[in-house]
Image (cartoon, rainbow, N blue to C red; front, side, top):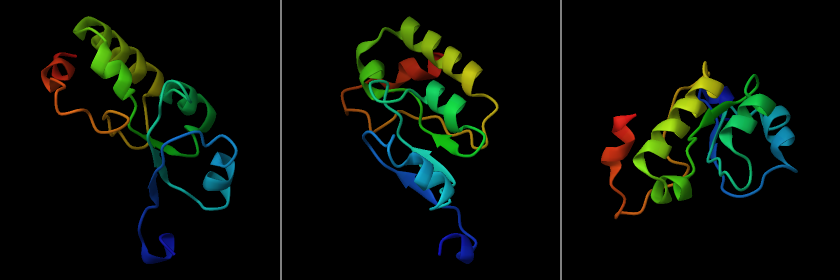
Length: 110
């Protein structure tokens, strides 16, 4: 239905999707998937596994962003961009919404 209407099918889905991701790509014809969590499947692994067939949205795990130092965040962002580029859709954001106490200024220093 989505493609018939000339739209892209983007999905946000938290949690482990290993058992259904091939169905989402092949049968559902998903164009992009949002939310990659380091403890389940880091976006760098997802890029290697699905990056030619699926656009990846998100990328830096929110738990890492809230606990890591600015230098560690810079390093992780650079490494992630190096592995995941080029991407079909370049949308970089935390895997999920950041807590209101998080200081976004450190992300922009990358």
